[in-house]
Image 1 (cartoon, rainbow, N blue to C red):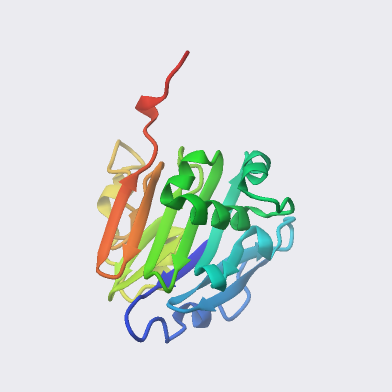
Image 2 (cartoon, rainbow, N blue to C red):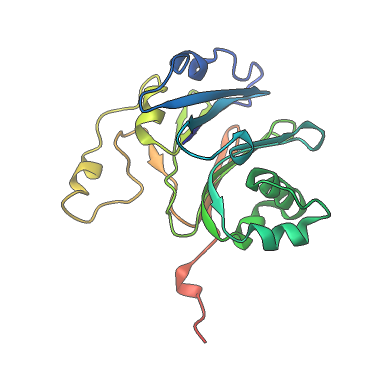
Length: 219
């Protein structure tokens, strides 16, 4: 799981709300690894029973103004690494950073995998959220007091919000009938749809579709 909060306001993120919320061990044998950078605070949850390390979740390169936080896997990483440059020993977050710097948001069209990705560019004043084509990996977001909050777990996201809103009736009814898939457990939280990405630049928030299953060609 990943979790984050971004603000491009002059004071940025200064109250370390996420750090305080997860300062103690999390149930289920998981440990929260806290990260803080210019305008960003968040982190990822590591389980002692799984073979993952920090490099599988996080990458930063301040020289090129990029921070990547992700959950999931890129299945065609070997193929993409071969075309991304001379470096061969590259974990998925590093690969994502390299591709984004080369191609911008359209890089995601080349990925094959299950993933939820945050790319933060503090000097550029932009943050992007990407969800995999089929929606295998969940990703929810919310806006609160000019900040963008996101997580792969809706409950975790609501727990760090000042006011997540009322329980969402539409979400609960979705257990019994078709409902608006964007709705989450709480009214102030929204799901990023599969095959979409979100761009956050302060007051400017937009969601774009990068993949349309109806355009798949079958030979």
